[in-house]
Length: 217
Image 1 (cartoon, rainbow, N blue to C red):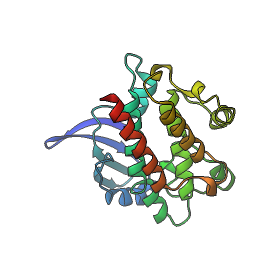
Image 2 (image 1 turned 45 degrees about the horizontal axis):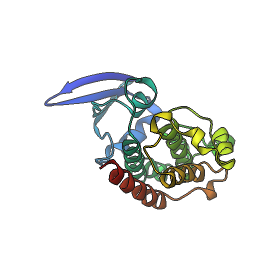
Image 3 (image 1 turned 60 degrees about the vertical axis):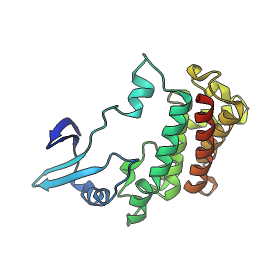
C-alpha cells in the first residue's frame, strides 16, 4: 500500500507498506542502486509493520503520463527514451531479483503483466520479464491497454499502424516504428525461448533512440 509523499531530512521520499512475504525482496532491493531506478533509501520492519522508503518521483508515474492526463502527450523521442532506460534497468532490478529467487515465485510481484508460462506453472523465469516488457512497449506505442493477442494479430496482418497513438502521426520514421513493433512482437512470443535477450533489446532500442533524438533536433 502506497502511503504518499513525505519529507525526510533534506529530501522528498515515498513510503510504501509491504507484507511479510516480501521481506526478503526488500532486503534484495536494498542492494540495488541505479540512476535508472527509484532507489530504496531505507526499509524497516517491527512487529506487523513493514515500510519501504524510496526516492520520490516528482514527475509521477509512466501510467499517469500515458493513461490519466489528457492535456499533453509524451513525444515519440520521450517514449523511446523511457523504453531504453527501462530496458537498461531490467538486468539490475527484476532480472537480479529473479536470479536470487529460490523457487521462481518470490519476486513475481515485480511483473506488471502476466506471461503465459506463469499462468500454467505459477513460476517466473527470466524470459517472463521480457514478456512483460513487450506489453509495456505496446502501452508506449498505443497509449491504450491492448491485449497482446490482439496486438500480435494486427502485427501479423501488417496493420501495425492501427496500434499507434494518433498523437504520434508523422513524428517517427516508418523504419523506427516498424522496428519498435518488431521488438514488442518478439518479446510477446508465447514460447519463452523465442523472446529476445536483454542485451540485444538494449542495443536495438539504443539505435532507435539515437534516430529519435536526431529527428527531434
